[in-house]
Length: 144
Image 1 (tube, rainbow, N blue to C red):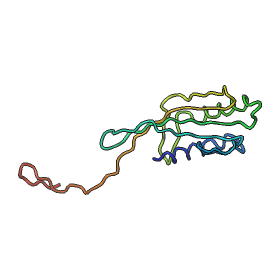
Image 2 (image 1 turned 60 degrees about the vertical axis):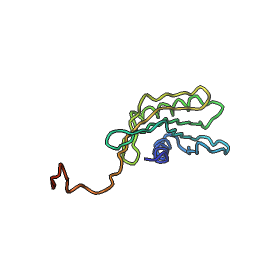
Image 3 (image 1 turned 30 degrees about the vertical axis):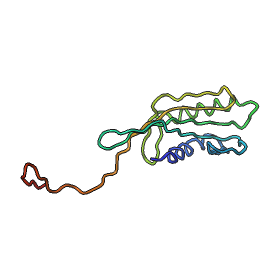
Image 4 (image 1 turned 120 degrees about the vertical axis):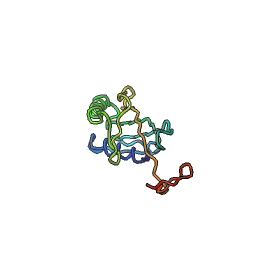
Protein backbone atom coordinates (compact mmCIF):
# COMPACT_ATOMS: atom_id res chain seq x y z
CA UNK A 1 0.00 0.00 0.00
CA UNK A 2 1.37 3.38 -0.98
CA UNK A 3 0.96 6.76 0.72
CA UNK A 4 -0.61 7.99 -2.52
CA UNK A 5 -3.29 5.26 -2.21
CA UNK A 6 -4.14 6.32 1.35
CA UNK A 7 -4.31 10.00 0.36
CA UNK A 8 -6.52 9.15 -2.64
CA UNK A 9 -8.92 7.08 -0.53
CA UNK A 10 -9.24 9.88 2.02
CA UNK A 11 -9.76 12.45 -0.74
CA UNK A 12 -12.62 10.37 -2.17
CA UNK A 13 -13.98 10.11 1.36
CA UNK A 14 -13.98 13.85 2.24
CA UNK A 15 -15.05 15.39 -1.08
CA UNK A 16 -18.75 14.45 -0.76
CA UNK A 17 -18.87 16.15 2.67
CA UNK A 18 -18.75 19.69 1.24
CA UNK A 19 -20.34 20.64 -2.07
CA UNK A 20 -17.89 22.44 -4.36
CA UNK A 21 -14.82 21.64 -2.26
CA UNK A 22 -11.63 20.34 -3.79
CA UNK A 23 -8.58 18.60 -2.40
CA UNK A 24 -5.36 20.55 -2.76
CA UNK A 25 -1.92 18.98 -2.55
CA UNK A 26 -0.38 19.45 0.90
CA UNK A 27 2.75 20.95 -0.66
CA UNK A 28 0.83 23.27 -3.02
CA UNK A 29 2.03 26.88 -2.72
CA UNK A 30 -0.74 28.34 -4.89
CA UNK A 31 -3.24 30.71 -3.31
CA UNK A 32 -5.65 28.88 -1.06
CA UNK A 33 -8.98 27.93 -2.62
CA UNK A 34 -12.07 27.92 -0.42
CA UNK A 35 -13.68 25.58 0.38
CA UNK A 36 -10.90 23.01 0.18
CA UNK A 37 -9.20 20.14 1.95
CA UNK A 38 -5.53 19.28 2.33
CA UNK A 39 -4.58 15.77 3.40
CA UNK A 40 -1.18 14.95 4.85
CA UNK A 41 -0.17 11.32 5.27
CA UNK A 42 3.00 11.32 7.33
CA UNK A 43 4.82 7.97 7.60
CA UNK A 44 5.91 7.48 11.19
CA UNK A 45 7.53 4.06 11.27
CA UNK A 46 7.87 0.71 9.60
CA UNK A 47 9.51 -2.43 10.78
CA UNK A 48 9.61 -6.20 10.46
CA UNK A 49 6.77 -8.35 11.73
CA UNK A 50 6.26 -12.13 11.83
CA UNK A 51 6.69 -14.37 8.77
CA UNK A 52 8.39 -11.77 6.60
CA UNK A 53 5.59 -9.22 6.95
CA UNK A 54 6.16 -5.53 7.67
CA UNK A 55 4.29 -3.23 10.04
CA UNK A 56 3.66 0.39 9.05
CA UNK A 57 2.33 3.41 10.93
CA UNK A 58 1.26 6.81 9.65
CA UNK A 59 -0.19 9.99 11.09
CA UNK A 60 -3.01 11.61 9.14
CA UNK A 61 -3.81 15.33 9.14
CA UNK A 62 -6.93 16.51 7.31
CA UNK A 63 -7.16 20.28 6.94
CA UNK A 64 -10.42 21.93 5.91
CA UNK A 65 -10.52 25.56 4.81
CA UNK A 66 -14.12 26.79 5.00
CA UNK A 67 -15.78 28.86 2.31
CA UNK A 68 -16.09 31.86 4.60
CA UNK A 69 -12.83 33.10 6.05
CA UNK A 70 -14.71 35.73 8.09
CA UNK A 71 -17.15 33.48 9.97
CA UNK A 72 -15.74 29.95 9.71
CA UNK A 73 -16.82 28.42 13.03
CA UNK A 74 -20.25 27.03 12.05
CA UNK A 75 -18.98 25.54 8.81
CA UNK A 76 -15.95 23.99 10.54
CA UNK A 77 -18.16 22.53 13.25
CA UNK A 78 -20.50 20.98 10.65
CA UNK A 79 -17.62 19.37 8.74
CA UNK A 80 -16.07 18.17 12.01
CA UNK A 81 -19.30 16.39 12.94
CA UNK A 82 -19.49 14.80 9.48
CA UNK A 83 -15.88 13.60 9.68
CA UNK A 84 -16.39 12.11 13.12
CA UNK A 85 -19.61 10.36 12.06
CA UNK A 86 -18.42 8.99 8.75
CA UNK A 87 -14.82 8.08 9.57
CA UNK A 88 -16.00 6.20 12.61
CA UNK A 89 -13.44 3.53 13.36
CA UNK A 90 -11.57 3.50 10.05
CA UNK A 91 -11.71 3.53 6.26
CA UNK A 92 -10.90 1.27 3.31
CA UNK A 93 -7.98 1.63 0.92
CA UNK A 94 -8.07 -0.65 -2.10
CA UNK A 95 -10.34 -3.11 -0.31
CA UNK A 96 -8.16 -3.21 2.82
CA UNK A 97 -9.75 -1.90 6.02
CA UNK A 98 -7.53 0.49 8.01
CA UNK A 99 -8.79 0.96 11.57
CA UNK A 100 -7.94 4.14 13.42
CA UNK A 101 -5.30 3.67 16.12
CA UNK A 102 -6.86 6.25 18.40
CA UNK A 103 -9.68 8.76 18.54
CA UNK A 104 -9.80 11.57 16.01
CA UNK A 105 -8.60 14.88 17.44
CA UNK A 106 -10.34 17.97 16.05
CA UNK A 107 -9.21 21.59 16.38
CA UNK A 108 -11.08 24.58 14.90
CA UNK A 109 -9.51 27.34 16.98
CA UNK A 110 -7.64 29.07 14.12
CA UNK A 111 -10.54 29.41 11.68
CA UNK A 112 -9.72 26.15 9.90
CA UNK A 113 -10.49 22.58 10.84
CA UNK A 114 -7.66 20.19 11.59
CA UNK A 115 -8.52 16.53 12.13
CA UNK A 116 -5.67 14.28 13.28
CA UNK A 117 -5.45 10.53 13.81
CA UNK A 118 -3.10 7.60 13.37
CA UNK A 119 -3.36 4.37 11.40
CA UNK A 120 -1.29 1.20 11.28
CA UNK A 121 -1.29 -1.88 9.08
CA UNK A 122 0.68 -5.01 8.28
CA UNK A 123 1.69 -6.04 4.78
CA UNK A 124 2.80 -9.54 4.00
CA UNK A 125 5.89 -10.04 1.91
CA UNK A 126 5.47 -11.43 -1.58
CA UNK A 127 6.48 -15.07 -1.72
CA UNK A 128 9.36 -15.87 -4.04
CA UNK A 129 11.10 -19.06 -5.06
CA UNK A 130 9.83 -22.57 -5.54
CA UNK A 131 8.17 -24.98 -3.18
CA UNK A 132 10.43 -27.64 -1.73
CA UNK A 133 9.63 -31.09 -3.11
CA UNK A 134 12.54 -33.07 -1.68
CA UNK A 135 14.10 -32.79 1.74
CA UNK A 136 17.43 -34.34 2.68
CA UNK A 137 17.43 -34.98 6.42
CA UNK A 138 20.28 -36.86 8.10
CA UNK A 139 21.36 -38.28 4.75
CA UNK A 140 17.88 -39.62 4.06
CA UNK A 141 15.78 -38.22 1.21
CA UNK A 142 12.17 -37.43 2.08
CA UNK A 143 9.65 -36.56 -0.64
CA UNK A 144 6.45 -34.60 -0.16
